[in-house]
Structure formats: structure tokens, C-alpha cells
Length: 438
Ligand SMILES: Nc1ncnc2c1ncn2[C@@H]1O[C@H](COP(=O)(O)OP(=O)(O)OP(=O)(O)O)[C@@H](O)[C@H]1O
Image 1 (cartoon, helix red, strand yellow):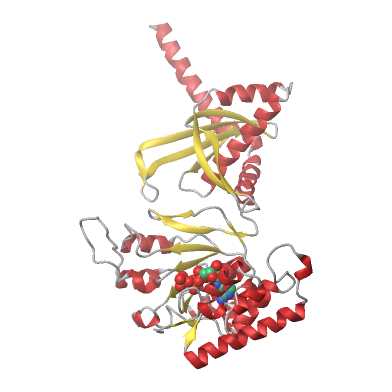
Image 2 (cartoon, helix red, strand yellow; image 1 turned 180 degrees about the horizontal axis):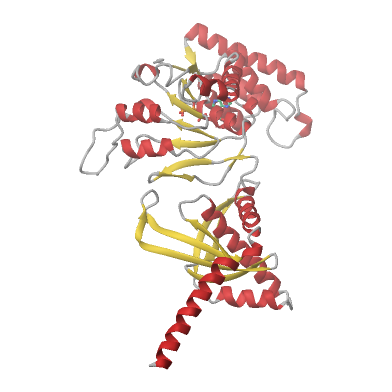
């Protein structure tokens, strides 16, 4: 009995001692799958494992590296799929093996850390529809300073591919997810709009971004809405993307007619827009007068106008919120949707005006051979390009004023891509058509 009591006491003592040691000497960091840092950390782990593997393969004699390799290899891995885009525009899918659930050991800047990845199958992250996960990092107290370092390294790795690019997010369940690889920024000047339109919008957005304090002092929600309307192919989307890139913003693309989109989901999405992002609602007129809901194909566009209005009004955030809407048919929009406070700036982006056509032409052919092919002898001097641009300008004017026929900027762009400068001007009349403007 005495021995039993002594053993029990010893066991209790050792548990107490280990708890004390843990409390005093160890420090733990938890990263839940709800946190932005979660995917960054997993990516960092994958990169770290790759690095150590390469070192071990190169015959590193360091015991730490080989030991770490052993400890990491002994566990299940899970796959993380990424789409990478190269500078030449091609893209490839890359799979990285990230540490799966279980316990791993890593050595970071000389300090050993225990990494525990746990998946809780009973708790589901509603926004993602995936099981809730938790990563716990444990290291010695004296090495706690390494946590912020490690996390910022992880963030840098994760965002390095995005620098100088625009990330387009789309709604995935009730969460924003990057859609495809980050896109290269487009020069704002490359979207040729009517007189002063581009500058007016750009100045307004910039002015708005500077007035955070002004809004706060007056208790006005810090948000601004823009409506770009006009015929298809007039540059609405391209301009918004170029502007976002210019201001180092990303874009959250919201399709209101998306399958499964409901008022509550929309509300949640608008409340959780990633920082420094424009919200872009495209073809906003189409969302409410789309197909009749049919139970046969299960199609349900559950967003109601009042749901959208509430979601837009409810967007309360300490950060600025910039919402862009586009439509081809402004007359079909409910006045409530575009009243000041919801839409503060409206601009028409129209079919090509004579000067827009000339400017686009110059952007395409100035400095380049206006004749297709490599035959340098046929390169027209730039005054010829300017003359041809003037010719095009006159044709556009004539077609518009004389025949009420118009051409979109997108068709002109397509035409210029296909033809050399000379042919482009000669054959451009075929592009014009009579349009009913709404
Ligand atoms: N004003 C413009 N200046 C330069 N390029 C333009 C312009 N308008 C359209 N384009 C070109 O045409 C293509 C389509 O443009 P975009 O998608 O921006 O038009 P949109 O007005 O948003 O059309 P939609 O109403 O159909 O969504 C793009 O490749 C873009 O480069």
C-alpha cells in the first residue's frame, strides 16, 4: 500500500512538474484555420521542408538537418494545389506537399519547434465548409521572439507572387478566395475613355481615400459607390481593374446571380471583404430579372433587391469600402440602388468616340510597324501613323453623325490586333452597326 501511494504521488508529482516546466519554459502559439496566417504557415512549412530536403540531399552532414528530415518524413502529408503564372503568360499547376495532421518537428534559426496540426472533424468551419483545424507551435520560452519572425517570413512567401499584381477574389461559399493567379497590373492610360472620365473617377477615389478622418468625425460610414454604365466592351471592367492595380488594390468580384448566393451569404461576404479591395458587382441589372427560379435545374438566385440594399448599407467597417457596379442598362436599375450614399459617382463609358478611336489607334501602332510581319522596309514613319489615326477619327465621326452607326472599343481593339495599321483603317467601316442605346 505504501509503495502504491508513493508511486501515485510520484506520478502526480511528475505531471505537476511537467506542467510547471511547460508553463515556465515553453511557449505555445496557436494558429486556427480561420486565421489568414494559417495557409501562409502551411506554405512556409512546405517550403521549409523542401529546403531541408535539398540540404540533406546535397549531403549536409549537420545532424540537425538529417534529424529534422527524419522527423518530418515520418508523418502523413497533405496536398495543397496552387496555380502559378509565369511572366510569359503561361500557367502551371503546382502541388506542394504540406505537413498533414500529426506532430512534426522543425528547426528554425537554431531553435527546435514542435508543430502539431489537428483536424477537428466534429467542428466544421461554416464559411469554408471544411473541418476546423488548428496548428500549435511549441518552443522554448527564450525562443518566443522567433514566432513573429517566422510568421512574417511566411507572409512574405505567400504574398511575394502577388507584388505588383492585382488579386481577383471571388465568393466561394461565404468566403473570398483568390480566383486564378494574380493578374499583372494594367496601365491606366491603356484604357482609353471619353473626355476626362478616367481622371474624374481616379481623382474621386484618391480624394475619398484621403478623407477617412472627415468621415469619422461626422459619423458617416466610410464608403463610396461608383456606377459605370454603358454598352458592352466599352472598358468598364478593364478600367476598374487598371484603377485597382494603380492604387495597389485587389478586387472582390461578386456575381449576384451566382448559384447558391443568398441574402445572408451576400451580407456576410460584404462584411468580410479582404483589406485593400474594391468590391465589384458586375451586370448588376441582371441579378434581379434573371431567369425565373426553377426547381427543376435547382437554379436559385436567392439575392433580393432589399437584401442587396441592406448588405450595402450594413457594410460597416473601420476601413474604407469602395464598391463599383457595372451595367449595360442603367435604365433598368432600381432608383433605390443608385441613390446617393449607395452610388456617389455615375459615369457613362460609351462606344468609341472619334478621339478615343484615334487614341487607341496611336497606342497600338505608334512606335511599332503598322504593317504586319517582319518586313522592316514596309515600316511606315510615325507621321504616317498619325495621318492614318486622323483618317480613322474622321471615319468614326462620319459613321456616328451621318449614319448613327457606332463601334465598341473592344471591337476596335480586336480589329487592331488582327490587322496592320493600313488595313485596319481601310476595313474599319465593317465594324460599325446601328445600336439602340438604353
Ligand atoms: N476604352 C477602352 N480602352 C482600351 N481597351 C478597351 C476599352 N474598352 C474595351 N477595351 C478592351 O476590350 C476588352 C473588353 O473590355 P471590358 O471587359 O473592360 O468591357 P466592359 O465594358 O466591361 O464590357 P461588358 O459590359 O460586356 O462587361 C478588353 O480586352 C479591353 O482591353
